[in-house]
Length: 104
Image 1 (spheres, rainbow, N blue to C red):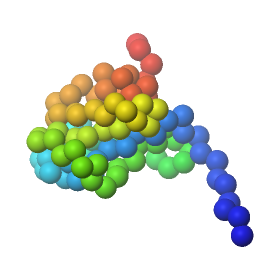
Image 2 (image 1 turned 90 degrees about the vertical axis):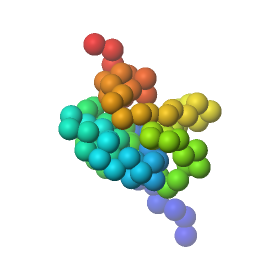
Image 3 (image 1 turned 30 degrees about the horizontal axis):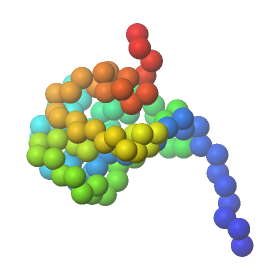
Image 4 (image 1 turned 30 degrees about the vertical axis):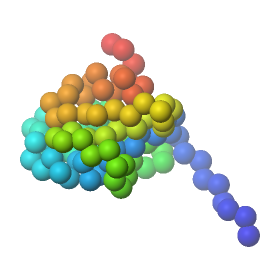
């Protein structure tokens, strides 16, 4: 039996370490600083969820980098350049760097 293919509208996939996000507890992201990075970035870029979104932001298991007080992010278009994102980072600037938003 051959695998079945399913189309997705994603132009890119961003991997966010779930373990790093959980370690931050209350000093997270978003307007009130209480959201995990993946959720805050999805909302900031108005991407939606699932395979019909414009891009995929996926929380993964541990990426084995484990920065103190930050979250590891991988843009799958540039797998050789990982990002360390600290709470308080400008999400618009991060979204532009990841190619999720056009320059205004």
